[in-house]
Length: 169
Ligand SMILES: [Zn+2]
Image 1: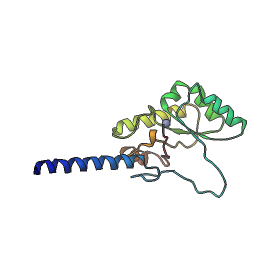
Image 2: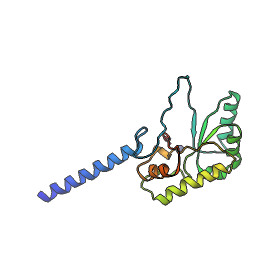
Image 3: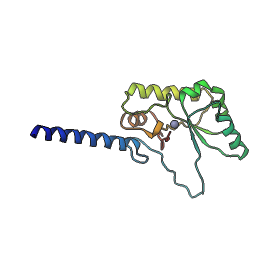
Image 4: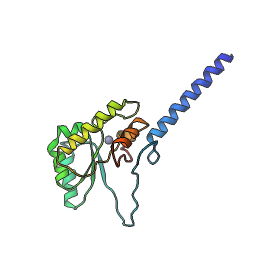
């Protein structure tokens, strides 16, 4: 009986620790390390328009056409994989004066992964974005908004500004 109580307590602690980690990994304004951009103070009535994922042959050009027609600048958080697959579309985003951000190479969840994986996901994507000629600052937006310790640690070591609210998809 006593042994079962100990087992139950250990299981309950493990579940609550895991739940806490998952809550933290989804936090939009709290982080363990680094500089998180979730809002910018301004007295102008402005909206920051951001698009996640891509570039894709289905959606990127139509979105760019709409933005150009209305003279709107947005931020595109691109994946390294899709940027490498569609470099001409990534270049079109840069050429039209939009901001580009890093949304990882693979769009896998960036938690419970090694520092080497984080390095590869981020640097590979930066390189693919820079190959378009884009010269602006590169923010990072984690896939699914997921981050815990290694990703924020890596970003804190390697970037002046980083991180964002994270996409829901
Ligand atoms: Zn995404």
